[in-house]
Image 1: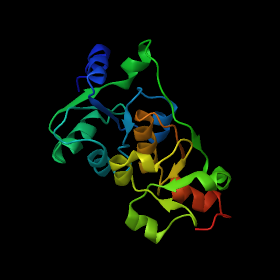
Image 2 (image 1 turned 135 degrees about the vertical axis):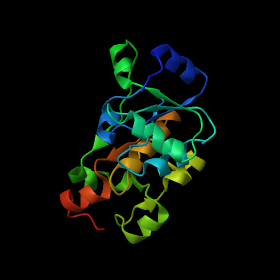
Image 3 (image 1 turned 45 degrees about the horizontal axis):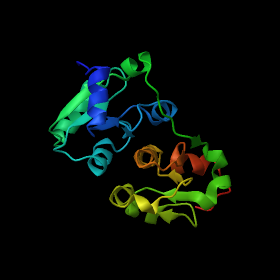
Image 4 (image 1 turned 90 degrees about the vertical axis):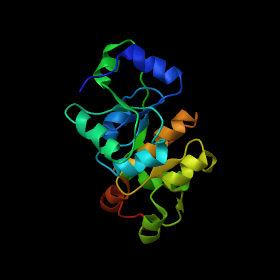
Length: 195
């Protein structure tokens, strides 16, 4: 699949075009194009994309090598109409800056209990969540970013929606973190948490 150039990506970013990075959450957290938003292809990909981006607006997709066509095709089938692809290796090879997002391990989750917010769907939160942690679904965050504060620590079932929410908040100038592996990892690595 043909990638747009670095110059084309820079122009698109300057014009306000959205960039969806569907690489694995750990890869995205470590290094990504500034102001791009994570919606991992390994998670609820189409759902997150629909929450975060307008289907009729231009959208640039970054995918890991070998999954470019799948990433574009799945969004196309879901109704996104103006898609293009960018190869992240081109950005890494340029002198452009990258951004990163801090993640905490599940075993350290108890240390962040007071700042934790659950960004799972409300229905999932009702079934299972860390006791005392409020529900702030991804869709609600997109509609009202003010419900998340600087320094919050986000989690969801597996860490995909929390990285989507953390990267979305970064585009608003609000720095938050997330828990790697989400609730499923905390159940194993932080057994003392009340769930």
